[in-house]
Each structure stands twice: as C-alpha cells, then as structure tokens.
Length: 463
Image 1 (cartoon, rainbow, N blue to C red):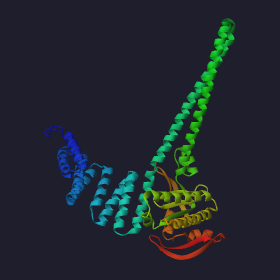
Image 2: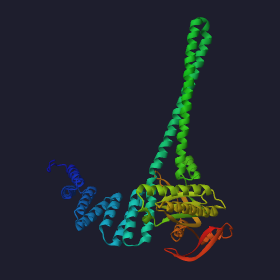
Image 3: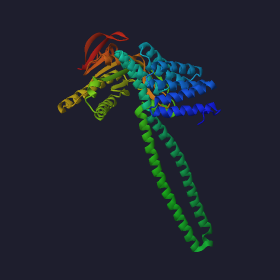
Image 4: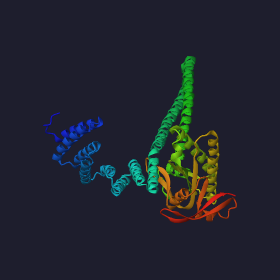
C-alpha cells in the first residue's frame, strides 16, 4: 500500500490489519511499529474510537515485550479515549488489563470492581464469570481464602448461566420446529379434506353420467375412485406418522425444559412467555461440598474425576426426587437444593434433612466400596438452614432458575462450618424439628462465622 494515500481512515485500517498479522505471528516489535503508525494516522481524524483501539493494541504489544510502564501509560490513554467515546464494553476490558498490570492489591481490586460494575450493566455473563474468577485469584494470592472461595463461587454461578445457553437455545429451536410442524400438519389436513371432496365429486359425477358413459366409462371412474381412495389412505398414514414424530419432539422439548426449571415455573413460562420472581417465607436450603476436593481430584484422571462427580450427583438427584426436594444447581463440586418452593408442605424441613442424611449414607457406602478397591474417595459436608428466599429466572436467552437471600448465605455457612459425614443445621431449623422423634441432635453451641458473628448450630442424625 502507499503511505501517501489521502484516505487516512483507509490507512488506519491497513496499518491495524498489518499489526494484527504481526501480533498473531508473535512478532511483537513489528506489531507495535504498525500499531504506532495506525495511531499517528488516526490522531489526524480526532476519532476517539480509533485512538482508543490503536493505543490499546500498542499497550498489549508492549506488555508482550515486557515494557510494563509504557504499556500502563498507553492503557490510561486508551481508557480516557474510551470514556470520551462512552464505549462501556471497551472500558470494562481496559479495566481488566489494568488490573492484571498493577502489583498493588488495592488498585487491582478497584479496577476489577469497576469492570464488574460495567459487565453487570451490560448483563454480560461471560465477562462477569471472567471478572469474578480474576478477583478470586487476586484474593487467593493474598492468602485470603475466604473471599477467594466466595468470588470463585460467584464466578461459577455465572459460568453455570453461560453453560445453560446451549440447552436454552436447543429448547427454543425445538419449540420453533414444533410450531412449524403444527402449521405443516394443518396444511396437510386441508389437502386431505380437498382430496376427500374430490372423491365425493367424482362419485357424484359417476351417479349423474353412468347411463351416458356406459359400462366403459363407469369402469374408468371406478379406477379413478380407487386411486383417490388409495392416495387418501396413504396420506392418512403419513399424517399419523408425522403426528407421532411431532409428539415425540414435543415431549423431548418439555423434558429438556423440566431439567432446568421446576414444573410450575415451566408451565408459567410456556403459557405466558415469562415467569415472575416470587417470595417464599419458609424454604429449607441444603448445601453439600466435598472435603479436600482438590487433593483427592489430583489422584484421578480428568475422565475418572468427571465420572465420579457425575455418579455422586446422579445419586443425589434420585434422593431429591424421592423426598420431593427441588435441585437448584451444582457449583463445581458443591450441590444445592431447596424444599418448600411452589408446593409448600408442612413436612418440607423434615424431608430436606432426611434427604441430607441419605446423601451422607450414600457417600459412606461409596467410600467403603472405593476403599476395598484401593481407589480414591470423596467425603462430604452438608449444611441446612430454613428461612425466606426470593426465587425466579435470571436472564432471557441464558436463563437460569435460582434462589437468593440471606437464608441461602446462612445455609452455605452451615455447610462450611460442618464436618465430614455430618449434617449441620441452624438453630432456626432445629427449633422446627426438635420435637420430632425421628431425629437426635447434638448441640454444637455458638460458632463464629465470618461476616455473621456467632451462630448456634446442631448436628442432626436419625434416632
């Protein structure tokens, strides 16, 4: 290309493309040189969007070359240009890079908090997952493992939302195909009626003209009638097969929908196209988590690890179905469920506790099998708390049914304060169950919980 071309915007694009090619080839010095030319050209245009892009590209190249101070200065320039241009998405990405550049912990956290605020405003679950993951890493490096776990948990929630996009899209496509097949079926039925009308008309003609046409004409009309009858029967068979295929497709769509939503919510979504969030006064929330998960996982191959977790969660799902408890989601190696949603029952705290105890029995039996085979095994903690929650669907395309509230946080604290092979319940849940002769309780006294002070807890077991 010619450096003397008059079209500066074209020159900017050409220099930027050249820089991108060099960057992909890991020729960072040449990439930096090309991006610098693009920057010089776009300054003439006073185009803040392109100034932001060029300075950002230059900063990334300098980071790859180890020129951190120069890169930081360019990132600040890029940030200024993005703010002038009110480009929220770019501002969030720049904050992310600045967080990675700074060694000062407080500055890193401040930048990441800013990036998270922007991602929330844009409802960008992908960026939120990455941002909270980076925040968890920062706290982990500071050896503040409590907040590292908290932010890792939040990151997993957003990852769960992203992961369900394919399932949601699949459901939408199936529903669309179902509606299309229904329209095709209506057209086919109309054609069938037309064929039947044609047969009646032909038979009528046969009655009117059989004397005129004579025996030869009558035979011809009968042959035509037989052909039409055969075609009609074939058409009916085809429609029956098509109806059966549509019903199978519909059942698959509904089964997928019920895999991620409670029945009542799924029905409301199908009828109204939306589902409103609801308040529930007495919901019993259960959390489980594997003890020393990382150390045990290191003894297994990736395939073995996924197979083992899947086997455990499949067993938990069957237990939830047995006691009528709603599975909410899994978060890494953690399992979350709740009783008392949509169809409240007076027995729901009892059902949730029984489900938790059966989960521990399931894991204990699995542990014995693994020990005999000389294989690694998981041990689990469970925590339970009862109280009010808000429940509803988050998102539009990447929707997810979830529950929120201090009850959820307290149940998570019950789990983290529990012990392996134990079910730990809050004093509030204990007050509901204490007169029940099916259970026996061990008073643990008041235990300090980060962020909540001292909470009285109880171990529960079958009497």
